[in-house]
Amino acid sequence: LTQGGKIRHTINMEVDSASGDMLQRKAPTNFETNPDEFTVEAGEFTKQYSVIYFARLTQLKSVLMQKTKDRWGESDGSPVFCPQVLSLQQDVDSVVIGTLLKNMKLKPTVLQKISGNLGSNLCNYTSDDDVLIIEDVSGRVQLKAGEIGELNPAHFVTGVVLGLRGRATTNGVFLVDDICYPDVAPQSTLGSHITLEDTSVEKEYIAIVSGLNFGANQEMLPLEMMVDFLLGNLGDPNSNITASKISRLIVAGNSLKPIGMESHQISSFKQQKLNDRIFLSLEGSLTELDRFLCKISSTMPVDFMPGDEDISNSFLPQKPVSYVIFPHAKRYQNLSCVSNPYKFSING
Image (tube, rainbow, N blue to C red; front, side, top):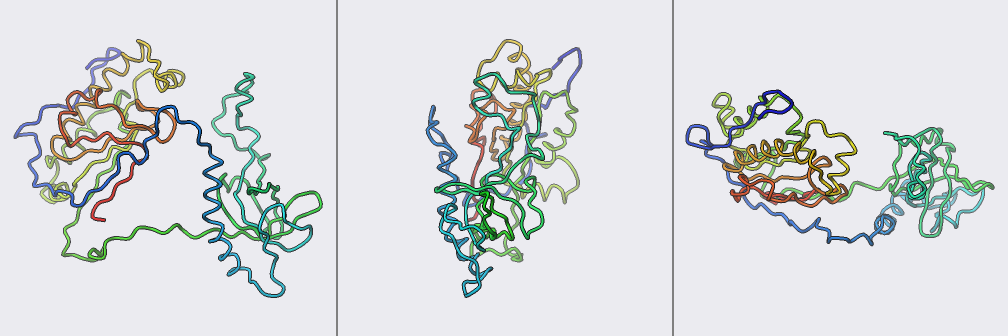
């Protein structure tokens, strides 16, 4: 391919006995996934973040209530456990549970967008004027540092459910003395028949790559070496043994980076308003990406996830990329275009 007067390397698409996968590759066992788990119906924008925050608070409140009682006691002299934010009493040692909100004055709002007053284009919306707030279904109250010493808004994010101990002041501010977080969510465990120390079970690997950036006028040699490694054509026999245990490749987003595409053009292609210039920029990039996926998919399962610079919707969850843009790779059943996020399990 040539672009901008420069000769660019390409990945050979043909797979034959000399360059194909010569490994006795380990086949994945008990691979499970639900391709529709993160599928959103077209035009479904009725669900708002407030519903997610409410559900999260409802589920974690009982957990935090027990943790705060274990931490700060439930006997005489212990703080008062308030059922809601607005039930706080002034100058009383209290515990309250709610959702944290960080009010960022620099963050654009819908009203600013409608009025056309978005101000400067910032890459960071945090500032020293940010304010922390605790809220639940009853209301909200502003937070400031009490005996805790420091309560830096830069160390927190909106949406965290936590328990706070402190005192409410006469001016409607809650002075935080201590913070209690919920435990880590229950984690899935390995099957009872598998342990990390069990040497009798053959090892199996999943390869994960991202940011391939086809079309970014980059050197193609590293990509070619990765392909050769996955196919068992690179390195010593020990490397080939390792490669043979890779049962799956996951391409985790940002596989395209068309040359000369500016930020406003990327936004327009996310909205599916592609113009001729963007089509020409994408054509070569998609051809190279198709060749790459074709070569790998001919030998092993490949799950292709979209990223924020790929051809998919710009909000999460992102829909799977259409197979149409991979005319050669789509011939292999090993290629699966999946959503972002993507969830799967292997061997339980």
